[in-house]
Length: 164
Image 1 (cartoon, one colour):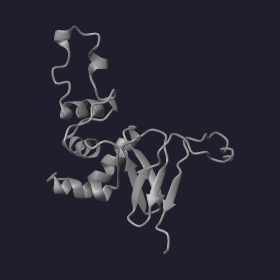
Image 2 (cartoon, rainbow, N blue to C red):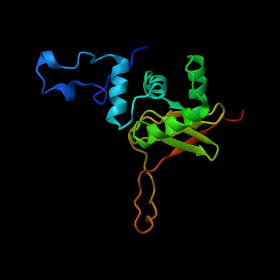
Image 3 (cartoon, rainbow, N blue to C red):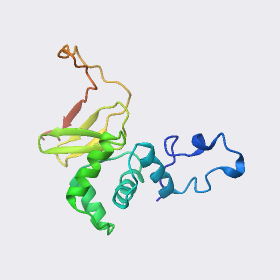
């Protein structure tokens, strides 16, 4: 499965000023581009970060829990602990590569789509999905306490099957 090349991961912008023969010869290599993405976010591309980054970003936008990513890593024979998965997800979030969505006190999802958007939560199978469209009207927000500002508003609409 190919790693999606985006304007964030592509090296063309970085190498535009170089003559054609001096451009990055590894441009387009998925692992190389992922390492570049991590470095661009201020993270050292360790073996664990690259492995988890590959699992996270290779399939496009998705929502995962730490436990689900740990299962995927184990299935892919990546030797990693659940604690390292948690730490890496939080590092990626702090670096702006992921968005954290707390659904319950006990359930947190990590979203590879860091744009401003909202979610449906299917309660029957704990599945989180992006809501199509760019905006959901949100009512009047309270004033933020002194010295604070609203960073973002997360709307999670919970869905369940209708009783028959």
